[in-house]
Length: 298
Image (cartoon, rainbow, N blue to C red; front, side, top):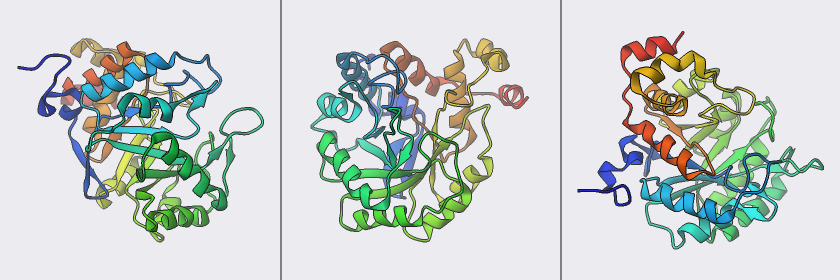
């Protein structure tokens, strides 16, 4: 028998979401956790209590989360997501995969709107290593374009700089974030790409072709903003019928849809709230029907 605080791995909410092998060899549950909202709700929002963030992280792992997505620039008013992760979870479980992003730099407006050059990426990777307290990062994304939508610029020089750090043993797997298909192809000419992290949700499917390409190639497609947010929020009135049929929230329906959409799709919903964490993880219990999918396709 299990309790809410002592799930067996096979019974945990995260495990029920299914598994994916990053880079063909590193297993993670498909429902993970994003650390962006631990320091604050937004990059300019009120600073959150770090003790709450620590509690959220520990509960996430209790619920079976083995994939945490973070970045060196997830920080606000002295509260740093990486440091919360280290405080809450170190020494880390052997099966815990921590993914980090590098590329953005803080601009004069205090937002991560600028971009690092290739010569600056080593320092950013080393910052993640230091603040997380690890010798090697499991997965590092080159995040392209700061807070803007994907652009078309070449990423070859910057991605090659990260590939060099992989050769040195500081990084296990490489990914790209906020990219177009041509940029993914450019990166794959330089080094293996284990994951793509782009905006994607039930009402934002502009990257459906890129998702299909990733699925065919065995590359994880990790959805950021899986619950909306950013420049493409979810309209809950459009999924109200499915919510009613399953007695579920809009967040749960949106996550259940992602998990059903493709075996290559991973979701990393973020929150600074224990209640929202429990709500999000409950999505793994929902099995959408053909009627649900037809409704959500409208």
